[in-house]
Image (cartoon, helix red, strand yellow):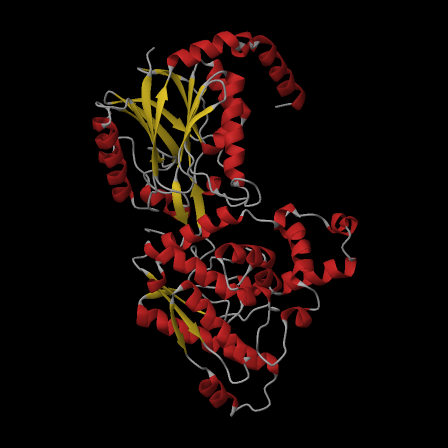
Amino acid sequence: MAGLTANTDLLRQILVGFVRDEVRKVGIQKAVLGLSGGIDSALVVFIAAEALGPENVHAICMPYRTSNPESEAHARLVAQACGVNFSVVPITPMVDAYFEMFPDADNMRRGNKMARERMTILFDHSALLSALVLGTSNKTELLLGYGTLYGDMASALNPIGDLYKSHVWQLSETFGVPREVIEKKPSADLWAGQTDEEELGFSYRQVDELLYRMVDLRLTREELVATGFEAEFIDTIYRKIRNSHFKRRLPVIAKVSNRTIDRDFRYSRDWGK
Amino acid sequence: MSDYTAILAQIKPKLGCVADNLALVEERIRQAITDQADLVIFPELALTGYFLKDLAPEVALRLDSPEIARLLDLSRSISIAVGFVEVTDDYRFFNTALYLEDGLVRHLHRKVYLPTYGLFDEQRYLARGERFRAFDTKLGRMGLLICEDMWHLSASYILAMDGATTLICLSSSPGRGIEGDTLGSANAWQQLTSTTAMFLNCRVLYCNRVGFEDGINFWGGSEYVAPSGESLVRGRLLEEDSVSAKVDEGALRRERIFSPMLRDENLFVTMQELRRIERERGL
């Protein structure tokens, strides 16, 4: 599928340029990001290291006690491979302290809390280091809503938010992300043995093929069926996109004045930059 | 007409910062004067940046503003094509390009085709120009286009029929499409400038900006396309550059002898059919 095969040299040039330009134009030289041991954050840290110089990039691994120890090992490996600053800030004390008050909380609540705990650490380090927080959500998970609002979805700049997971794999090869990170099964790592694809119920490659045709090429449902996608799969994915759309928007503001923020008060974020 | 040198100033304007951008433009003009160029061309909205939205009225300049006066003054030493937001006495805001020469505004073009699809939203904020006119300069008869204008065949066609032998296009083209050998939008533009030059036996001077605005890249690749359709010099992709084009009058003469399609263009037939279409559509 041509659309899911990216020109990785071009992509690299654009994304490195993006990080360099958008970070420096606000008068900042550094970036900070969470490194999970997975491929998305690994790719972003490689992009950032090339854009800003590894000495200006701070990667933070934030494990919880149930996280797979392999994740931290992989995060460390990635940080070493691209030469960035690396530190570990465990989130177990804060998360456990909170859930002592709510011992019956389910996995979803716990997972969201962990993602938001990590977000607060990254934004605290943003202030500490004068560094912008880089996001690591890819287009596949953003469209499916497979992320925590104000958690892992929060950032100042996201270099890979317009890349499907399939693109992330390709570009990671170009950057030389360590093999074991590219090849392992994607996981949110909230509990032992969890994998994204098992939880979602389909593979990233499968859904990327559909999303690309549905979102980027704007094929109709009939055309998608004719292309060979199951009607039920199409409908499930369409619903996921629709039902998670709120996560991709700013909070809704009740309009009462003539100029409401983002409605008829419209400026680019790079205003004056 | 004799040969001349045109500089395509592939700059990175700052969004909404007219003073900074004016300084940048003046610096490039002075450099072009030092380099003994005859013409220096800047991108669309070089003085303001592109995704202005509600900033458009705040950064707009009157033709008699001190900023334009400074550029007019510099045009005594070199011809200048530059883009900015123009405000008129009746408070309309235009995406405008000026051609300045010998301290005078030789031509003013207001962008006719304001794209409002995909990532574009120009017509929400800006008023639409209503004419395409060729104009005479020291360097020959020219036509000015602003970015999307060129995607309408009629625009270049009118300018060529009006006698322009050089089409100058000021652009702020966002880069998109990462599937092919080169950037999708760069590839599309390169086909367009080449085909336009070839169809109309005109040379094309295309100046596109670089930099990022809210994550959107502008891809540069400013180029000089000969009347044969051949790209003779092209700026860097995605990076600032200064492209020096040696414009060869002989190439235009030869092309117009070898491929006299424009000479043979039948304006009578074209007008007759366009009038018929207009009539039948009930316009």
